[in-house]
Amino acid sequence: MRGVSRRRAFVVTTRPDPAQHPAPDLVNRQFTANGPNQLWVADMTYVPTWAGFISLAIVLDVWSRRVAGWAIGEQMTSGLVLAALNMAIQQRKPKTVIHHSDQGSQYTSLAFGQRCAKLGVRPSMGGVGDAYDNAIAESFFASLECELSIDVPSRARLKQGSHCSATSRAGTTHAGAIPALDESQRSTSRGASNHNL
Image: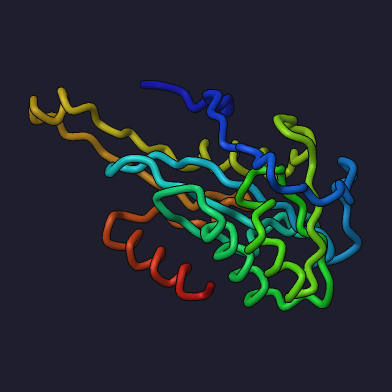
């Protein structure tokens, strides 16, 4: 038996692109909104699966703490964050919204900036390597990791014929909107997400 911890292993997912200029920080750690679709936070992480790790990008509404858009893929690309943004726009149809993220190269990319300008989305970016500048997204991923209890078997245990189980619970937190996907669903979802670019 093993307990679930909210502490994550340190994995660098924010890689700034020195050639790109980040958007200003319009939030300044004031994660409040008076209604839906005023302030969104976004981030990406790795999620373990039976087939290896997948990349997950999310857009979270600060007011409701619900996922407005998400996308999964095999790599952390600007296309992945664009797919999550596109889903959020299609689902919520905001008149104007601030999209707050870190300064990862996916968010400072020319394609992401152009898409935000076309949709009337105001990009905002916190500092590099400071989890407090995107605390709500970090908290979401901590909750998600606790809810997705996945026992990924080692190769040695598979050779011995051990039976391992993977369980996923939708749970009661705001993380429940993202399902656990097997390999066939991953490719279907990835294709649907990328289709919206």
